[in-house]
Length: 387
Ligand SMILES: Cc1ncc(COP(=O)(O)O)c(C=O)c1O
Image 1 (cartoon, protein in one colour):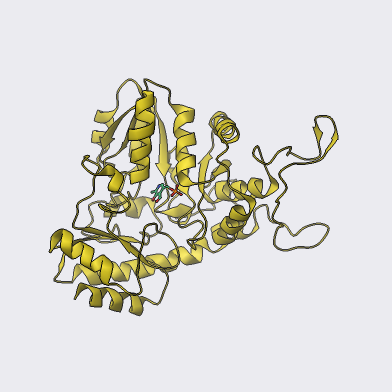
Image 2: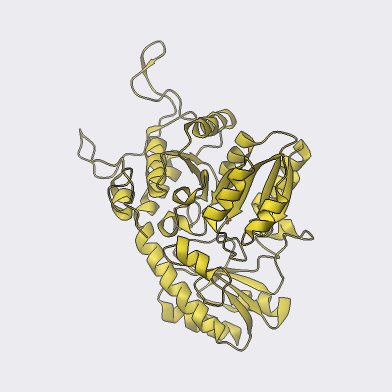
């Protein structure tokens, strides 16, 4: 997969992550950009600002650079950052839908996205339907004349289903809908949905982009200037913007995204292979395995297969809980995408808000975010925890 194949990206992925918008400071020579903490900006005369900024909720130099870097990494033109992934999702959806409109979402969508649809937007009159992202015909069938947005994750959280992005884009566009891809699980290093036909990419930058489990954030990237303007209007009007220290952490994290993702992928491949051979395991869900139904599609559109592994236990719910509670190197915790390995039970933890709905994950499922520790330690820890 090439990431230099258009005029917007003449440099490679890591070069852009490290250098886009980050020239050493002209006056001081600082190699690392200052953190712009100012909430307001001096005006030379009334209404005449020195640069692009008047008030930090509307815009700030730290934010502008991070938005430029994320857009560049996604192969897109225009980026926006937010105080969380959910704020980015809320902005994207409320920019595109009005009461009476309809959205298609994955039937195993991230629990927080489901809650936003089901408990916040639905009471305001926005309708939604669920469809399996790996079944493009099912997505087409779920669309109605009122569908304004097809929202997919790929791979999905938590079942790691893989959507064929170009095929879903075709179906969405044929129905007059906007395709938004939550690219959190893959990261732009592994997959760039705008190049595959998506209209908008959304990120929880809390995960791989930040990479160190120390900052909550979100982002939207698009090539469509009108959409970007709408996102900017809501960003400013509702105010869920990231703070300058958060932006600094995110910028720092993104510089090492490529090397971290390579290690996440190598470790996850080893974990998936080991689990697949274990007697206590009913099935392993990892797009890199030939047994995964989305393996061929993933191979077409992803550089590698990511750091997330799902494992279903023969012993059901109790065995799944026991595995989560027995690991020592893997920390029992929600979230993913940090350098440290995490393990969790989606039905009880991250996806509890989907309980009782068709979006609820199976209760024998354990979700593993494979970190970048030494792989021998990760394998030994899982083996001892499986007993
Ligand atoms: C796939 C996915 N999308 C969106 C979100 C929400 O992001 P945040 O927690 O940064 O609001 C998450 C969080 O876990 C996620 O896993």
